[in-house]
Image 1 (tube, each protein chain N blue to C red):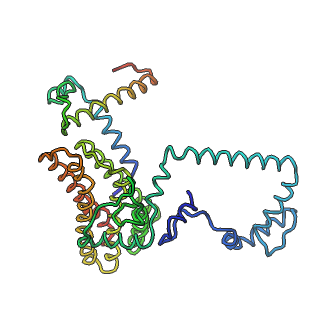
Image 2: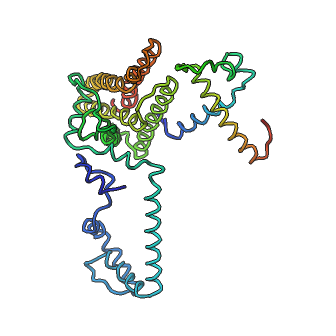
Image 3: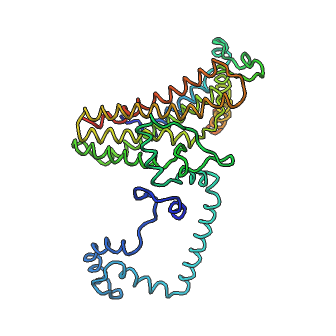
Length: 79
Length: 309
């Protein structure tokens, strides 16, 4: 079956990368998952959708930092 | 890691794999097997003579004796040992930052009675009435005193036994090779990690405020290995019928066990917080509990069906 810890690590890395690549303006806004759209009130019930949007936004923020480091290290200045 | 602490925690049922290596009388015997070749070689070197019967330990002691007589090298040995002691102190002080050793010790505070009762509960949870964990001044009571408390001893032992039983099953079918053992262990660990991460993610998304720590979750998810071992052993003894019967029974038991345990951890918080119970949110939590419990039989089947032919 060969489902090893290493393949789990690879899958996790690819998933995090995929989340980091989602484009705010072109994609997330069109399906209503943009970060300026859903924050709503400060009520007690965040709900699954807003939690998910927060998660995506925080993953993208962290990835932006890491991408910046990697690209600076390899002298590529995109993003 | 800490043999004194583990020994004080209770008598393990099986020999613990974490005990320090055996004392010298045990070590002398394997070296006796290497007697003939090593003593024959050392005789030819013109080193100090060792009587032939003593063998390896003494022939290594005599060159060491001449080495120790030199004052510079004895100082070097003393310096090296102080460095090692300092390093050990440093590790001991800082290990708590990375691995919560004191918290882990709680999960291994078990004794034989607890293990017996817990195993019975895992296989037959239908008659047990009170599933609440008892607290003692805000901290949960050690597993030794409360059969409902999660522990890591049973999951750890069951995992290792599962690997060994998998090796046994593969061996009886002439499919065994040593790297397959590592593959089984890695696969089971990967599934466990995936389960823990998926459940932590869903707990975050559903905003459940529980006191269910990650280690608790690992403990609960590790209880399914007990059923898996039972299933595979019955499959070895009685073929596919025995395997399916025992596995089916253990699957249903683990399902009921997980639901009854997790319900108290995940769903009780809504009532305890004083927040008016909203239907939709509680329903989501119920779905989460059912999904976690339903994943257990699936994984039990997935990890064992290829072992029983």
